[in-house]
Length: 178
Image (spheres, rainbow, N blue to C red):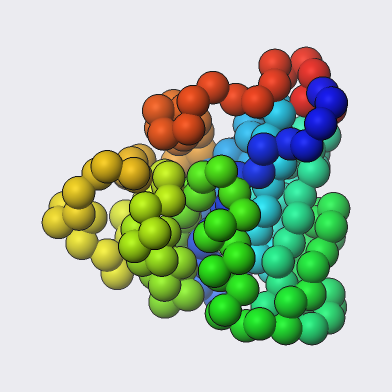
């Protein structure tokens, strides 16, 4: 593949905010599938959902970028290709919101809720996975987002189908993504 890759932003809980271990397995599976289809990943870069998605992507030969809250890369996942220490804390979520062609949201805490609300408010294409207990999904219009309930890694094809529905086909054939 030549030229820049299309990035997909991954948002979700840090390790302590992920209550269901299947969430991490789903994030890893989705990260791997994104990479195999030619997407790059941009995440918050820490352990938890971002780290799991990066692990899946790098194991599939993909590239990952982390927009870190801190001014140093000390807490960055080992599976991040490029770490960008922003020193912006939650304000870096604005950059994360606009960096990807789309956003895939996994279960998390209040930081994830903030990032989902920001994506909804700015009409960014977004796939929301899991149950999202902090959000009333049944009361939101679905113009720019789709919901894939559950955290089972077997939902990876449904997540990818929802992404395609929102942003079109992947940027590269799987054999040219590496």
